[in-house]
Figure 1 (cartoon, rainbow, N blue to C red):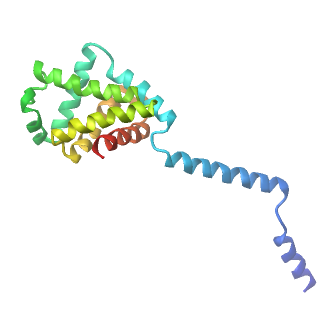
Figure 2 (cartoon, rainbow, N blue to C red):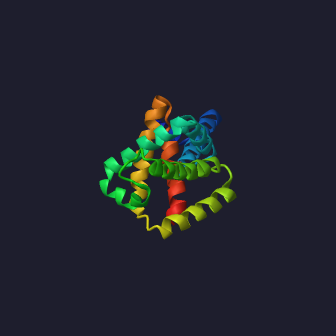
Length: 180
């Protein structure tokens, strides 16, 4: 019985200081991971989205091409969405009227993305866009359609460099600011 008690005692001892330090370090890493996962569209993601947007959206004629590809992806997902764009000749993504509309929409997105690291200003811009979308009766589902098309278009432009998680988190932040 004495041998049994000794074996039990050795298993009940406190871990060594080295083991305790390692366990505390692992716990800290897990907690930091949980905090990072819970922080949607964090500072690093915002900077990455800004950089990737600049690369994907480009400049000049490349912006028109990006817009045409984006709107075709939207209309392929939801052909009925064209009905929202009759005023700007939405049946032809390459018409001057629709190209101008496309660049207004993408210009608004460009501005919101540029303001991602300026929270007060970003929120003011989102509130402005919220009013515009509400007055036009844009349904909530349209934001998911736009997200899918945007993710596909930016992803196709950037290839392996595309950070889907950062884009998803930051797009959700933007869309929720416009929809809420």
